[in-house]
Length: 532
Image (tube, rainbow, N blue to C red; front, side, top):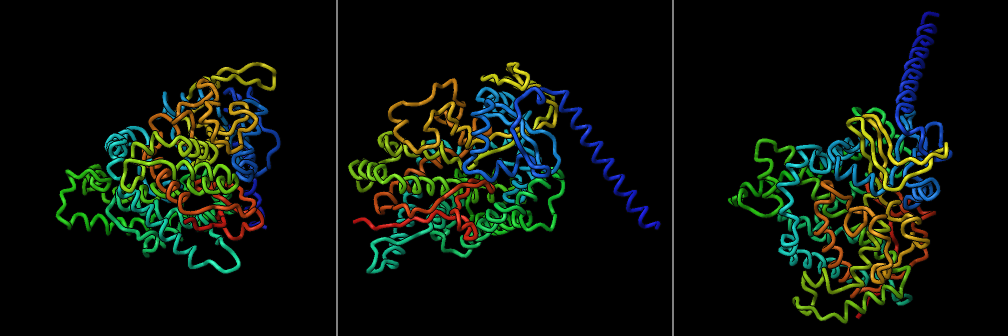
């Protein structure tokens, strides 16, 4: 009887604490402007709107609500969390990410994930620490710095092309002139080679080295666990209790595996550099700058920096190339047009190839394809921010609340979570027109673009690299890698659509899945034909 009463008392106490927390959140909610904003319809009692948002293709849930409700609205958080503010408004984004960037930090739900996957490097850092790290590393990613590693990029691209040619040739049968390949597993070989070579002087052997295989396997496991319901539950738990990072949940534990693998490799690289006699204090490569940034006193954070650039420096670019190959396979006439531009161009580089400068300015259709892919498939498809203080966020495009009143700004309290759905921002029908979700590179050539006032302050008006002080530091390197690798692949292979229904979901970054084959994990299956 005593145990029963104790259990009942514990349940009653827990219910009282939960009720008090909900009441407090409601009080804060009505002290802000959130109650005045339009709200997304529907929602689940436990998942809120978060499962709906993550289960739809390419941010369609966010986009549909923005097109119906306006560019700023609210959504229910999962796990009984407080109301979340969603904004796709370019004025609000500029305020949050440029004018008040260090008053809005990464979400407490996201920072532990970044720490587990990569460590406490630039993506994790905030405030003065972020400003200091960026200032030291920025010179590594200037146009001149990227130009200086052009040979390394071309070499890695050539290795990928040769390896894929060999694979296709050896897999051909008399019955078919094409070979079906999951391109997802191939492109990262070149981008990993590039970051290994130009950043740390390490050869990943076009994805064949043991450490490259370990990185690939661990990343695939991390991504695929994050795609399922356990991954969503783990995310909601971390959002509600961000201090809990060691739960025995596979989706959480898997996040730490890849950092362990890369840091072991990074330690070998660092020790090799220190023992080589090279004066890293005067070096211009990425490893030298990282060692100069951290010195030798905080080796753990130095290894976090290396882990970050090994992972981020190759995975996001390869994903973008994968989506380009998918869309070009769906539009063979555009693939032919791109191939013709590349074959017709006589560059001033070795063997008539385009030089670095020519890749940037003399291949207009290649440039248009790249911009359109980055618009449709930003690999960091959404992010979140958390307000550190009470504030009023201005809106460039007012919204109409439930009362019918126009709202020009949003008053928030410290701790407010703000969802920024990058992929939906780039696909808004109200901004980009009725073909906003269609792959149409010509829009960049015909100047059929929205007015600048309706776009963000990001690269080419896109939000794919964010904007302001937190804009992707390596975007120039990513752009050049994309152009070099895609050019080589398109000139040597024809990529054909298999008819697979490929959809995209978010797990760490944007991930492709085939409907009906979800159990096979991330993939973009294409039929590949060798060209003479």
